[in-house]
Length: 426
Image (cartoon, rainbow, N blue to C red; front, top):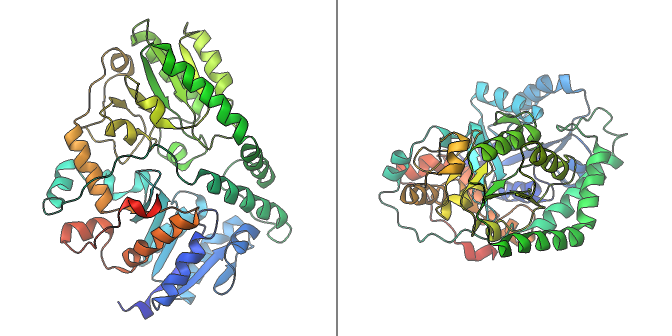
């Protein structure tokens, strides 16, 4: 298909100007682009042409979306995440009409990559059906010097800044977009307050976690690391067996109390964007006391994962992408939810008490092949939130979207373009 025949419909994207930057490049390639906005935040980050405001009720969205697809002869749908209701409904309509669905997500290999897939991401990704042997076959003719897993999140401050600005704009525009309902349970005002509070408390939280991390690393006790996620994140909400984070904490505590050696400790590390909407520290203290683990359980508020992983005996998570940093270090990993990396070659299926007693080590060669496959396909150098990260991302991803094959098909068919190296965003 010629690029002048490509008609893109963008829905909601990452906080900040990334979607608008991408659309401008696609237009220069000859495509036509529209963006549906559901609140003032969407409008502020999409200045100029192609903006379509949706101010109707939620139940009117499927019919409106179908009409837009027909009226504008849409060939491509672009979303950030595929599980929020407005996106899931649009994706279903697109599939029924043969429209290509482009899905962006945070990187499976964070922080210096983002994820670009077609059809779905996370538990809906094509990676869920691909086996390690199939990936190894696709890599047979590829040679890549793999970079080390970075130790830091990347553009965290920019992420939080754009998030606070976005939710502030949403709150200011509630009268104009009276029917807008966020895809999370909190109100727009509550979301804005949490983002702003988290942004302002960053220095205090940084000091707190440095002290906690130092105590753990200098203690000398063996410990197992629990990598926590955001309870409201799509990966946890839609692709895990737990309804709440408290349920996961209970399962981990019970397994540790039953199986771990008595001199071992348990360290819970919060997600870097944890904002206090879930009382993690309080729940962890309560459950530690219930299971007789007082003094052996620790909580760290966000921060660098590498500092804790380097000395850990094993790692446990629901389905956090950060689990891959444990695998890269050869640490035993136990996960629970649907995850693109949950392959039998390197993720343990032991009962949790058995895992804590004698965790099985991963097949690190198989994991390196898996990671190699991701870096050649769906993981794109760059980031959504910093200007440098967006520039690096634009250099690669527009061509990937305009290509006839998705990233996995391109590698398997030999049509994949050379990939950028990590130095562009360091």
